[in-house]
Length: 279
Image (tube, rainbow, N blue to C red; front, side, top):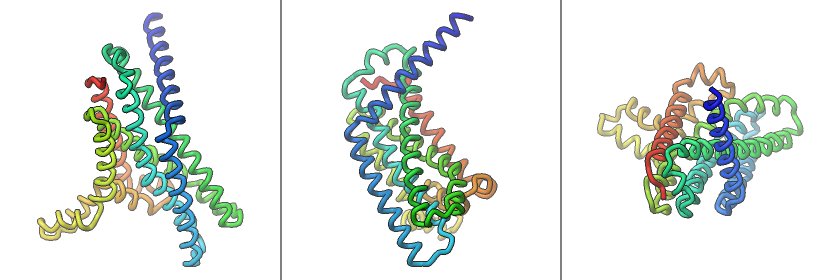
């Protein structure tokens, strides 16, 4: 019993060590810093555009508009950051062959992947907190400190965090999986971005989904089925509400599909990491 507890404690300690190492690397990576600067620029431009639209249309209760823009900033553009995070997480190790020795011992494989997921997950949470604080501050500014507007927005944060983490972890795992499957890391990064384009842009477009439905007699159900496979379409239906309970009651299937995407992506990347030699 003592041996098992000691072994579990050692594994947890090693996992936390890998997680801290991963978080520190992501925090100091030039590539990550560059993509974060781009992401912050997109955030400010998106918020400014929404504020201009709200003012020009004279919307009396703009919280829903800001919330939709906020979630799309997190999940749409944020997943591009996730692709880079997944790429950086694996490429830095494979390029330096730092995992070659450890991965020859199956005992260490689960510790490494768990630590990497934990460290990257912590980094994603920090991004979420940064964007959320900036957004809440922005809403407070444009609404002249309206307590009702701020509280209404804050009430939707549980939903935004759930959607954000599901989307981020899915594309992080897809990018990490690509790095494990392709030895050429530039190709792996390309595959990660290609997956984002296909899932977020292509299959939700009228041209792609419409072309497929055309072969089935322009079936509306086929059109909805194909476009509904895109996270972008899922978010569209989910964001009709800001309240998590209402979303689960009315759009629970869309949330489940996102959860399923995330779970499958993590499982595949986990299996690939445990079984393949990334040296």
